[in-house]
Length: 227
Image (cartoon, rainbow, N blue to C red; front, side, top):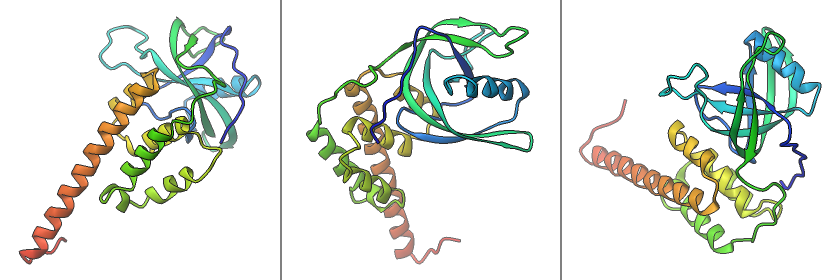
């Protein structure tokens, strides 16, 4: 999964704001685009680098352009015109922060932003074998290990082309569904910080599944059958 993507941070990027954070670096997501201005944005992006920034609405802001600072810079991997819009497959390149926001214009009915990367693209990271082993132990624990989606993640651990840094993102994307927590993961610039978030969320998930399984066993012991 090692890829080399050129990004020119000297130019502005089109912004596609969504209600929630839907993508992290190194992860893939399909997105349906139906709103006319964003269909036009996709047309423009496809004629250029195929890159834009997925942003998140700031619901607590009173600003006329209420967009949160952290974004995921994405690459369009595949696109298909469908009735009423586009289906596009996106690959997360890196996390970045908005440093300057440009409002929409008559010939560009979407916002653009100048970005600052929150991590270095192409940086040679250490193997972090201790962290890799810890992550493996967390997802193969008694309770989390019973989930269907774990099998795919375990396969990632066997691949030499999937770095520990990438595994961290893939695990966060797979298991963290809470929008606010996923945004914190996107906005966190350090591996140590992201590790703390994921470790905490996986530990909580392990406890919750354990409680649910114990409740189920207690119900069966009392002769209560779930509907």
